[in-house]
Image (cartoon, rainbow, N blue to C red; front, side, top):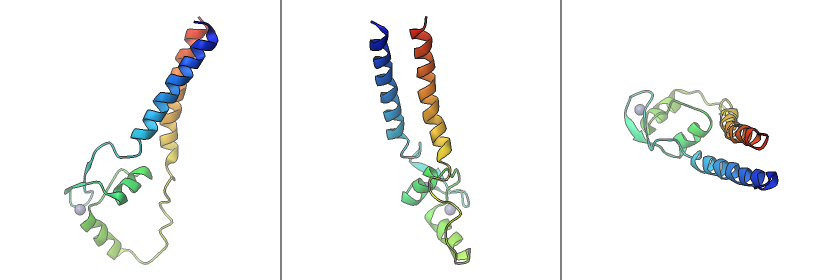
Length: 110
Ligand SMILES: [Zn+2]
């Protein structure tokens, strides 16, 4: 194999890894979560998955979420914009890009 073929193969492998990562990163790693308030184990729903994507690590069951909402004064929900913590996700993507790229360079340059 010449260098161009080698690099092409590496690019395909990296693209595959990134695509697989992006596909599996859309949902939390577990289907269930323990409520951060009452410790009840509940399945993830759209609200908790959105919170997970926004970088939250603590989730609340439906009952606790409603109870929490009732205690909150009426205000714009601007404190936790989705995508605020996207840099953590990007870091993992960069890791997957840099690691094979480094190995590829070491392999091609030998
Ligand atoms: Zn709860």
